[in-house]
Image 1 (cartoon, rainbow, N blue to C red):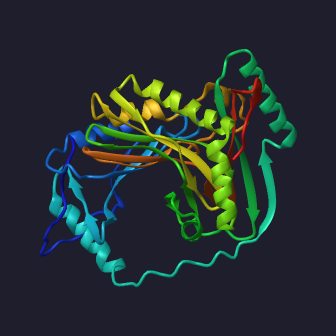
Image 2 (image 1 turned 120 degrees about the vertical axis):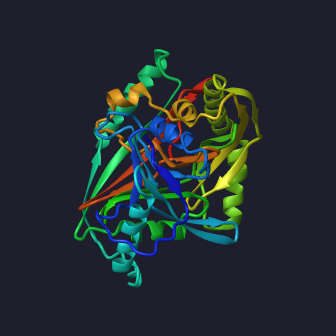
Amino acid sequence: MPGRFIRNATVSTATATKRWRAAVRHFAGIDAAQRFLAAQPASPDLRVWGLNAFGAGEEVAESALFLPRLSWRRQGEGYQVILTLGSATSLAADAADFLSWLETHGPAAPAPLPPLTAKVTGVAHLPDLPAWRRLVQQALAQFGQGGLDKVVLARRSALSVDLPPSPLSLMAASRHVNHGCFHYLLAWSPHDAFLGSSPERLYHRHGRRLDTEALAGTVACDPDSQQASRQAAWLMADEKNQRENLLVVDDICQRLRQAALALDVSGPEVIPMRTVQHLRRVIQGDLQHADDSRCLALLQPTAAFIRRHEPFARQWYAGSAGYLTADESEFCVALRPGVGSAHLALCRRRYCARIRCRSRMAGSGE
């Protein structure tokens, strides 16, 4: 049975009886999180955060979702620090645990982020270049046989470093230079985390209203603004990149027609990032039901070709990161990530699609 959840508690005297937990509850799948939120009608703004894996069973659980004990939110120009208490037996006891923890840890000033001083001592790619070429040839063969319309292949790069970098410092550095992105970090320990800065929203749901996007088609983004404008104009006019974007639009719309009453697709626009520019079309619609589990199943890809042929399990990479509540949810695609540990693992994607343009087949890379 779910416990009771409140936002504020006043406790005059209390003694901690167990170790204070940073999360009120954990969920190994979005179905469980959704059922839990539906069972809390008195707290419709309870927010569950975390990750959803690219493919369940690929060395990780389906999801790593949690209801945080403490959360900090920015609402417009204001900020909120939210404490969530939860217990099947006694909210007062749960509040006592928090007060005990606060007495021990609260007065200390937060330590500054450590500088990024780690030096890369080695790099190993998986797959390596010969294996990568074989993988691309396998995908092209599938295109020729009609078994694929598009596939997004990936390479994992393991960077050996002399000192384990701080995931928080990496995140701060990425936020400083990667503007207009969804920044996400989930840490299991001070040096074990999954983090990244993604340019792509998977979906945003408000009630039954759904917003998603097709982000495909890429050109460089020159530091010179005039050159970047010329590159953007070329991208808008390029037939091959427009077809690539429309291929993704068609795929998303075909999936969403199973759950949406109607869909609207915007015209193309160019989204500039730090080093590249992308074509984007926004897709909006009204869902038959406000069901995040259904949205995730329809929109988060799990290509069979990738699972059969890539030499590593993607785990959280290319899954999703974000939050859900009973009324509103938002997830980004977990792209451009790093896994912090004694080694720093990075994943990058390469797009390969069957696009007929002037009777030729073309692909693009990011």
